[in-house]
Length: 248
Image (cartoon, rainbow, N blue to C red; front, side, top):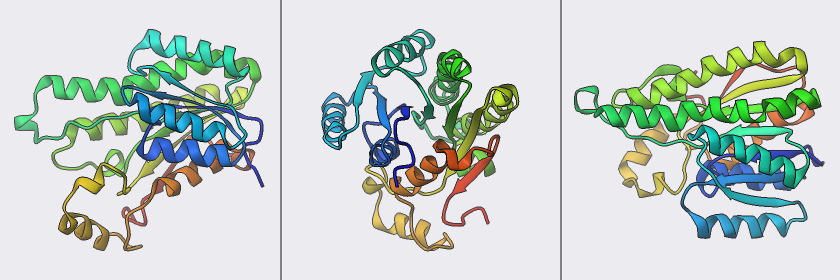
């Protein structure tokens, strides 16, 4: 059963990791996929080709969600190319970890700009289209760190917690027009980035998780499919922890 048949999704930061996993699973469920990337041009081209081969329409856009004008232009281009915007997945994000005493001001500002300001930019960019359609699903990718905090990640935690507050506010503002806004808070997800960590560190993380394993991009993508589909029509303003029980 294809849960997203005929819907168009924008996924930011989708050339690798979690974003790529979401794009692939959305395509498998029949969604047309517009995705953004910042620098990985070859990876983006490869993903675009692979997604189109599944029979849906897919297109990659080089666009910086942290730039207000670029976000507005992206929404305009996607609407022109695809005819509708039904789903927005705000996935683009960065980390610049350090203890507060060693954190530079620019490291704080950059993480807030890319992770949090981009949510404002993109939501504002798609809002008019979704209001006209009187339907839409916005999914914001937070983190367990945004829910519980983490030493050495005050900038990242602040950006991800801010995302939750913003999403709950949007759920209240846009709910009367049938536009839903929800949050996914991933736990330890194993991607290309975590593959660079030493085995001992990874195993200590796995053993601390009740399900005794790291998550995969597909685990996150499956939760996104549910929130993007009509199956979750009465769910808005919620934070779903996809973390193997970390925050239990």
